[in-house]
Amino acid sequence: MLGTMLGSRFLRAATATILLTAPDTIAQPAAPESAPAEPPAVTAPACTRGEKSAIAELACELTRSLGELPNGALVASSSLQSDTELDAPEALGDRIAAVVAGTLGRGARAARGAAGLSRARALASVAGTLIHLRPSIEQGELRLVADVYPVPKSFWDRVRDPTPSPVAHAFASRRLDAEVRTFLPPVPLLAREVTKASSPESQPVALACEDVDENGSLELLVVGRRHIRLGRIRNAQLTVHASAEWSELSPVAQSPLREPIASAAIAPGAHIDVGISDRAQAIRLDPALGRAQSVGRRLPWPDGGCSRFDGIALAQQRVPCHAGDATPTWIDFGHRTDAIAATRLVGPDGRLRSVAAGRIANTDTVVLRDGEGHRAQLQGVGAQLALGDVDGDGQPELISGASTLSPEGDAMLVHTWMNDGSVQERLRLAVPTGVYALAVCPPESTGAAAVAIATRGGIWMVR
Image (cartoon, rainbow, N blue to C red):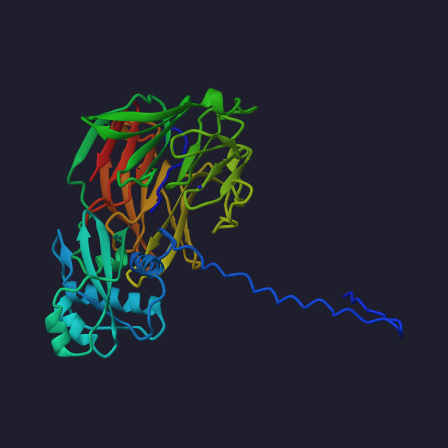
């Protein structure tokens, strides 16, 4: 899930050989024909991360790890273990088993109902091969262990070997998404806790929140007018473990804007794209903020692609940020913008949905669009935007600052783009120090995702 802000102060011909012989000569035997070359092996595409439902991506990884299995295997799930209350744990186990069996193919089928190893072996006695799943929900992740057992045909064989060792083993995990959360109690959208931390950045202009190096811990990327900093909140302060200076990354722009606009987009484990109107070039950095590559004067969208500058705003067309990048999901947003946000989220049905938001340049109106052609509009919005599924129900939340010229009157606003097409305000939190940048963090538990607010010299984490 990616949620990143862009904004100003307040307001991502065949040949043949013929042998001729004279009558008195003996023809030499022709060289044996070489065997036809074998067709090159077809490499299956890599399993995705964050581009499909969590269950589908887990099934892909397990199938890859387990390798080729006999036809007709039985997939059975044990009781799902969870560190939080579940509304329908057995139904979730059945759903996981069905998706894994479908991904395995080759006649694999899923057993219904939770089954421990002993019962699962009995159920698989005809199939001959058992894939036993052990699902769990821990710390906001769906974790899945899979073990493969060859199954004895007779009851007495099972009695003689009641605890066999698996012949193959695999593990994978993904963050919870809306499909999984349909089996959990609903999450209320409330600002129950606000943690305030000091930050060395006095002029933040963009913010992003992600597990940048995929080590299991979320990090904040704070973009300022002079520095880019990466760190974590520890003991009420932003502890910075990597930083870069704009003066060493890019020359000053020929025509910088009076009120800078900036954005950042994180591809976990791969790279970080950062752009700001102050500088002549946007920059692609590695997860440690090193090995910089210039990508032109443009700003990145969080879900991929960049927008070039068009005067004092961003062009409505989106282009690849870097040579070799995939074509952006959105080719033409439809408006010149001065603030952008985007995210990809999974609905309760397991389908991926791309959502983008852009504030029409020099107005307080934001346009929301998705990949299915739906569109909505919201007025009275400031120039700080982020998108994400905060409560995990599959409906996107637009996080924004207020449309105000005064820091004292600023606030964080949360609106939900509902399935019926309406946009409803869900939460309003006063931020009298001013909202300078916003980001939605990936969920770290079964509760609501945290929202990060950058103010002058500080970071607020709203949970």
